[in-house]
Image (cartoon, rainbow, N blue to C red):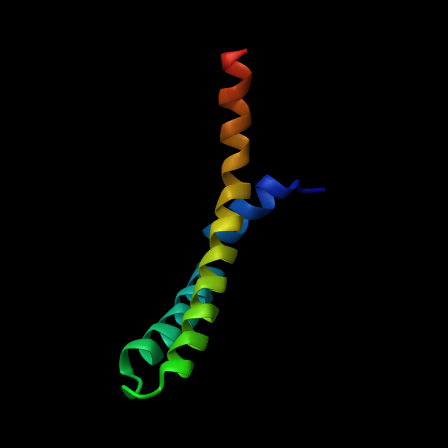
Length: 77
């Protein structure tokens, strides 16, 4: 069975997964920058969704980096 660190690394090397993340981020960015001036609520909703995707990506990257962090921690002790 593959551990969480290895699974996270696999996701971050998967072109389809990365393209999907980028496509969703671009949808929300284009709405934020291309929306009507008066659509403040729409931009705020899009920004919340964009931040959620970015936080999701960051959490996967954090899990992938845990292996390296553990290796460095062991060297210190």
